[in-house]
Length: 240
Image 1 (spheres, rainbow, N blue to C red):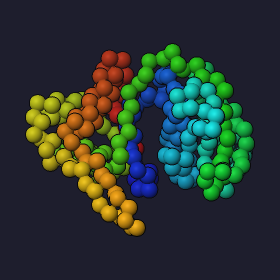
Image 2: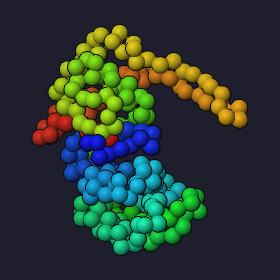
Image 3: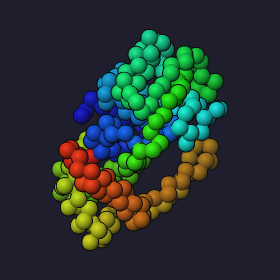
Image 4: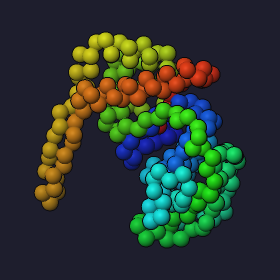
């Protein structure tokens, strides 16, 4: 998966393989993340668009993150024209037919960023009654620490890759082992630090303690349990 380079982004998401085909409750912020994944992994044009994780967000001037309906801003480069955005919206509507409907409103200049912004409206949202599917997001540094910990305990992943997949049966064995032998997490603990940056600004790092590591493992375990409970055919957690 070397084609997907996230070095300029600050976090890594984890989700169950095939969860994009399962209806689940989505609010404005969830829809933003879902559109982002659709552009990257279904249409396969995220790299071409230069689309970062934070380039799709609710228009907070009139939409709260937890609103089921409202407006979304997609920050784009000048090479992306209305025809392309209309195509993306139309394809997404087909992808989420019956669950979510978007309306493309147009492209103009952003008042918050020095870029063009595509305005999109969530006009229909029929997902609020569905069961929530567990997902997780980690800052890069924490994700790579977890990857290294899992790899050192036998999980066949490259701990320095920004994207990949994890077999839940292999992962479950390792999580159970770490739960019984917590001392194995000790090398991945990181104490809080504070440094002085340019101009005297203080740079604070909250560190990474046992509770945080166990919280990440618990998040992965929730995904494992969802796959097993719902008997999903693909026993895989994706990350990227």
